[in-house]
View 1 (cartoon, helix red, strand yellow):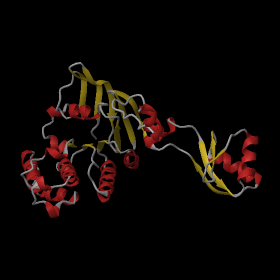
View 2 (cartoon, one colour):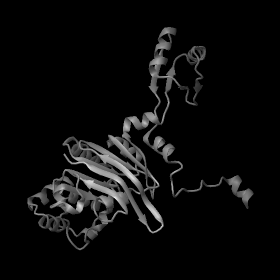
View 3 (cartoon, rainbow, N blue to C red):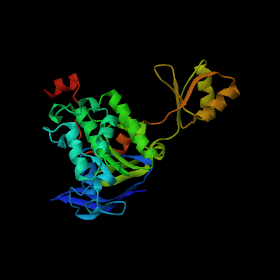
View 4 (cartoon, rainbow, N blue to C red):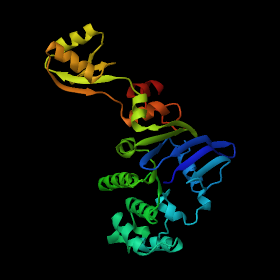
Length: 314
């Protein structure tokens, strides 16, 4: 099995430090989500891993070797960084055939990945006629061409329609299930939460998080419960007597911070109060991520002024 290892990696562009003494590993058999605000250093790190940029310091290896030393790189590492990189005047099939021939891959494999990416019917069309989503599919087909142990994808859902998003989600799970090493950069938090097992989060070139999805969500929250009951006032009084401070939402649900579903369920049962809804409240990945990176965002929009504020400023 092949592991991606980044150790003390640093990259400077003049006076700007894009990657700052970064260390993490990407293990086989799981999908690792690679997250961070714009300018956090994700794309730079992936370029350094693929030998497209030279590091200022530290190392970035795949299977304990630099990418540049791999004999048949497409057979070992499949990557999609920019779906627009393919030559627009070539057909999709010819683009893949060129890659296959230069890497000693059988031409039959081209037809296999075209089918897997859903591009067989348009394989003879010139790439310049493709939509962004079709280019994304072609880029993913190219990444899979050598049947690699390592797959690195930068924003793979970009431009895909709903069916395509489901396809790429299932594809990443399948690749990880086969024991491959899968690193996926994305800005779509809800989508990332649907496929990632592990998270590596950057901020201003530094490592902020390297832990499982479950651990990350748990680390950004405290217990809380949302519930609905046929006797809200009686349950509210019982919760207050127990030391909780429940609040009631506009839709009639009670929210109890600091409690678990087990705590509230046990209390309600002891009081003979029926519950019609009871769920542990946990932050979404988007909420947890925004909370973590609030001070690490290089580019942030200013909230729009309200009508009253605009009038006063005028």
